[in-house]
Image 1: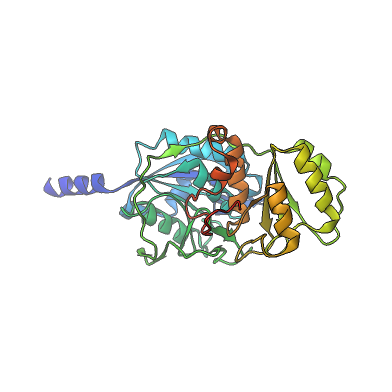
Image 2: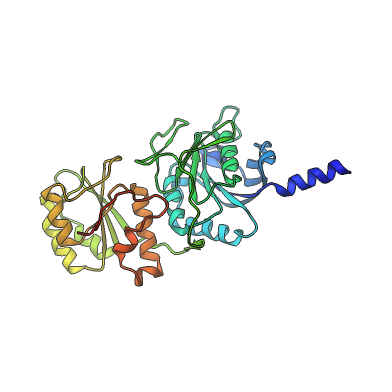
Length: 350
């Protein structure tokens, strides 16, 4: 009788963690046309019985898709599921495909801000029902991190690494160490269920805030040598925001610079963000003439050291947010959220 009471008390002390399953490789099995997500949330839990030693897990199936088909509407579903269950659970683990995981992690960083309860996104390069797989370790690590008192905010846990949601990028298509943190340290490492924290989490000063609107009417324009101005006018007419992925530290080639001046004058309300095609060290449009002049005169926003995934998600959030009507677009874009922007300057718009 006493033993039963002790076990019940111990069970009640453990954190309640909700698994939100969305599909991806971790939930995939072979089909006629190749791997497809077929394994459901409860079955995923059944493959990691050790999770019950870590926490009290529950599971919900949000969708079951290949992450190639992940869209902003699915991000909204995730946010809604987290918000509706926020009071009942101590943390959340989202099982997700790897191909668009960095986009989802960045999006949730803007859609769920200042969360004292951790929101962990994970997945795998091999299905969880295989004998040799990274899925079980990644999931157990994720539950371990989500159940820890010191965890908060949105992050990816993958391959023993804990990466801030705005800093993750998939850098390998097949290897188990598929993700890296771009120009920012790992928040922590996890080994044998032990968490080694490198950046202690500072308590949030503001309450958790949920945003469920994202405006995905944006276009990513990748510059190539000799790019033609043909088609740029159509982009400005059709899209609310344009992200220009430039070369090096950033600049606009002479072949299209004139039309950028013309279109900026015709569409002053559009968001134009200059990013870089280079993965590390970010942009600085002031270095070269090809970037300096057009930044000042066309009022480009600049990604600096933000990842491309974060730039895309943040632009969608700004365009969809009611706050953009009260604060300037520049203020919102340069507001640091979940370690997304480390660049320091007295006035990034000068």
